[in-house]
Length: 455
Image (cartoon, rainbow, N blue to C red; front, side, top):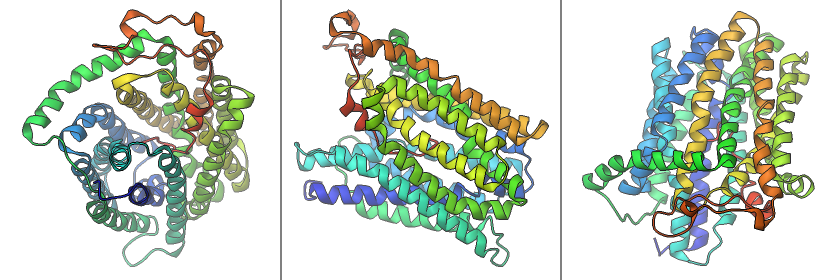
């Protein structure tokens, strides 16, 4: 570990990060359309998608303990191998239950994959140089995500345009290529990630499993003691529900507009690339939004604007109007993520930061599963446009949940009261007092764009 320089560690981290997200970019434009091609209705697609959300919900917090006990590298190898298995199964799946298993395996993959690479990068960087500024690499990782997903989406559109190839349909071809790239990613992970493991073996694993319920309970306790934090996590419930509109329903809406799934998939390739560039541009606007509006008001405004863009996707006629609204939606999403995460970080301190971040992520999973079932069923019963409008309303009504954070930011330092259980020392709850004002640096440090599903 110490033989690597900070620059070498950062290069390896960014390389692995890009390889991790490239297959996702290939899948995004075609996954829903492929399931439709294989005979699933929108309602069935919504049901199989719940498998991922429920699995991630169950495993998000405990898998952090697995990474600490077994090491980050073996957990990532296991995660990426499971991801490869899910892609191989997706390529041949032709029934409801096979796709249900595909999404369940994707849930295991995402739960195991969430966090270990970033933790490895920070720890390895500090081991090489305790004074190193690892934030630069974390910021560049956001750019890498956008480029990797955008390139994958562009490649996916090209493959669909070239297909079919022999017995492989045009929509299945990107899945095959994604599986190959996933295999390449595993080889790169084994070669590039160097880790010094401090704990290993069955005893450490058992200890992490036993301790997981206590960590979950303490993380939930933080929400109970801080209404600002509770409101911020509640935003994820509406966000997770509403994101189904532009992650799952947009391809179907575009197929309706252009008159065919293959034509829609071909358009979604370059459109996906442009969307992730728009996402990065939105994230770059975060410092300006913070200076002019403040974190909480800007975050609330983004929730409303995102609802408006989703209404545009549902109502505008013609592919040009739908795609313009789609790009605007991702630009707003890029600005929303760092604003929300900056507010969340300022409410947590101490050893439970990761647990609370996982809890924030977990809140979106059941909401996303409910949204997938509800909105796809509504689309089947009425129309995709109506389902998107309902999802847009859910996105917008989350805006008032930023009011507690806005009120907390307006307090003076003398107004902030720290309860005894939130003070430092033995038994420190990890709960930070509500801040007196917004911190530009804290939110700007989180300004890198993240994927819409926020893995």
